[in-house]
Length: 173
Image (cartoon, rainbow, N blue to C red; front, side):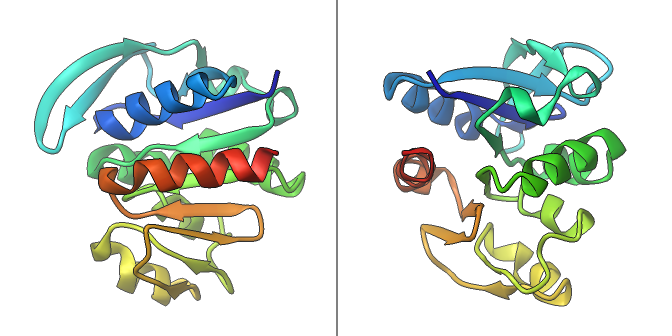
């Protein structure tokens, strides 16, 4: 059974974790929730409103990329902006990239590809407001439901979750 790690901080867009997680589990994947937060309790958001809380399985500092087949980065503005500045998140993202494992980022999560240096030379999508940031980091931006460039899979919004999940599934086939 292939294993997928979800990496987030807290205050993430709940649908981009929960719906993606549920759809990947329905396809037979084992998933693990990993956080860079100081607590394993993490807060889901429905845009700017608090939604449910979740309990992470592991802290990022305890996580090894070799234990997983893919990495998923849910969005949410606060989560994605915090996550991209966390050294332990950057270390983990780079470790997945070094082994060419799929790294899937939705909505604001492609910001992490800027801070890790992975955006340069790639064609990516994400939430529309990321376009200038990604282009300034050397990426080409496309407005598509899902974009794959090498091992990087990006998507725009919760509306694109079915396409996002299918791209992750295809990359792991």
